[in-house]
Length: 305
Ligand code: GFB
Image (tube, rainbow, N blue to C red; front, side):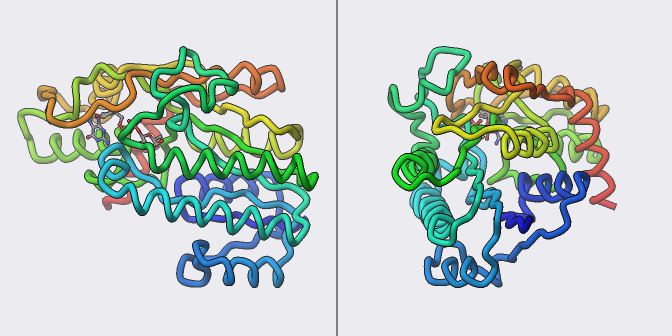
């Protein structure tokens, strides 16, 4: 079995690589950004013609936190649409046996009833801060659905909740909240700062999944799932940004104050996934938020040297 992991150095892709290694898959192909521009259809077609993979994990994407999504919407819609369409179409043309596409919980309507069932997709308006990213991701999963329906391709989609883990982005302008807070608390502790400033109100609720648990769920889906509708992947539990900050503060061992910058956006008030479809298929998450944050903080400190 020849497996192509698109986006193998990213947060999700690198976790898929660890999972494949752990499960003794050996014939894995990857390409760096310099070797293959996934936004270029000619390059992508030539790559599939040459390699002819059996399985594809489509984990390549332009991603970022609330600020990056809000600031660079043109890049988020263009890059993500091109990457998804080029790979999915090449996979169809070169008879890939199974492809898994990754969406994200932010593509559901902003005011979707909670917890969010898979069927709520496209039933309401999107959250404005990540509309461009959401439209690209929705197009990708609809493409998988229609290629299955019209051409019989075994292409499936997973919809992960907010993810975190090693190899995450810790840049304060473009990162998601969890790595940003690890860095902010760590630097405040090292520099003896009296307070740490968080964005928004601290009231939004978010669900967090450790990325190695996601990779495990993706293998489960590749082996056992084959249907049009995408599958939510999460823990089924959420936490306020304020409580997340208290948890990270404790793990890091910082004793100063928390302050909030209300000029920064809150984003969606809540996006808790209904994970009953995945649970009923026999998969549950393993890593608690506390354990996951401890692991990431340990990795982050080692990386700092
Ligand atoms: O993780 P995050 O950037 O993205 O922000 P979203 C989550 C919440 O944490 C927001 C707050 O309410 C932020 O205002 N927050 C507090 C912070 N302090 C910070 C901080 O220092 N940095 C950051 N980044 N946030 C993203 C989408 O939305 O979720 C993407 O924009 C993607 O498209 C991703 O889907 C999963 O959860 O709001």
